[in-house]
Length: 239
Image (cartoon, rainbow, N blue to C red; front, top):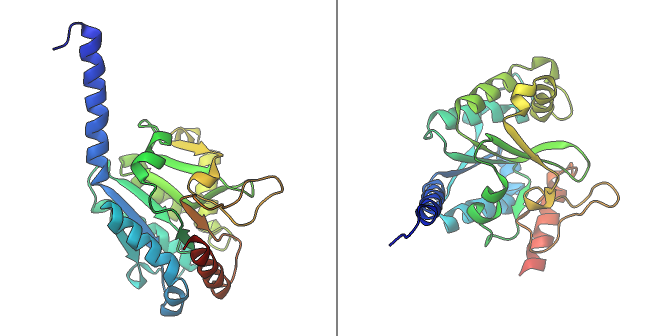
C-alpha cells in the first residue's frame, strides 16, 4: 500500500493526529463558577448557553456552586478550589475550558476541536489571550490536566496579598507568569482575543464582539441586570 517510507510516515503522523482529536473530543470539560440564586437567575441565559453548547458537542459542563465557596475570600477566588477539585477527578491530559459566568455562547457551531485546538500547541499546558483592553485575561482560558497546571493553580491560591485586588485570581495568575519564566514557558498567549474572549468594549482600534464569533464576554459590565439585558439583546439579534 505504501511505496516509500515517507508515505508511511505521513500516514502515521496523520493517524496520530486523528487519534488525538478523537480522544480529546471525549475529554473536554467546561467549567463555570456561579454562586448565589439571584446571580444564577440573572445570568441564566449565559449559563444555559454553555450547558447547551456542551450538550450539542458531547462535552461535559460543570457549574460550580456553593460547595466550592471559600467565605474567607471574595467569591472569584473560589475558582481555585473548584478547578483543583475538578482536575483531581479528570483523566491526565484532559482538556478544560474555564469560562466566567458572564459569558454567552454566540456561535455554538464552532467546536473546540476546530476552533481552539489548532491554536493550542501540544507542548503547552494553558492557553490565554491578551484582551481588548490590553491585559492578560483569565475570563476564558483553556488548560490540560497536567502536573504543572495542578501545581500552578495551587500556587495561584497562595497569593493572599492579592485577595482584594480588583482582578482577584486573574492578578495572581499574571503575577506568577511575570515572576517565573518557567511558568510562562507552559503558557501559549495569543492576541487573537475575538477567537475565545470577545468583549463589547475595549481600547480604541481593538476588534470587539461581532456576529459569528464563538462567544461574548461581558467583562467591564459591573451589574448583572445590565449583563442580562445585553445577553437578551444579543440573543434576539442572533435569532
